[in-house]
Length: 117
Image 1: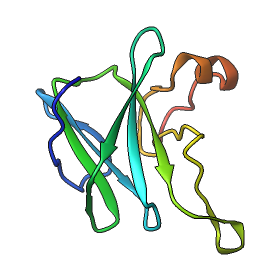
Image 2 (image 1 turned 90 degrees about the horizontal axis):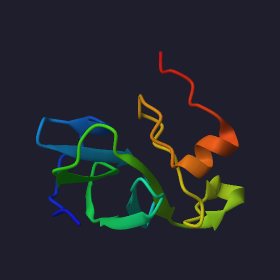
Image 3 (image 1 turned 90 degrees about the vertical axis):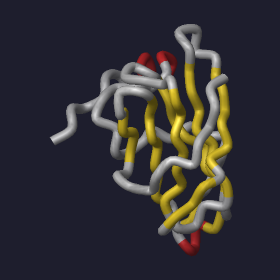
Image 4 (image 1 turned 45 degrees about the horizontal axis):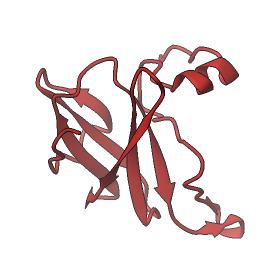
């Protein structure tokens, strides 16, 4: 597994700089965030994202680049009456990602991602 650096809270989403990727995800009420990386065999490696700035959870992974498939598992309260439905058993797709980085089982189940506008 690659080293994990603190990274930056902005911009949101994945940002490749030619040497690695900065990941940033907004969640005001999350208690814990895991970045999940998938290899070609759909094996999942979970990386705990520990840095949080302005409600943005962020990390930088040197050596990671375009084509890396990933998602998030986000922990927090399950309080539907307050609008909170955190469930780390669910893999979340990055709402800011511009490409289709879903693991193959999700791609087979839900089809290709819509292009961003």
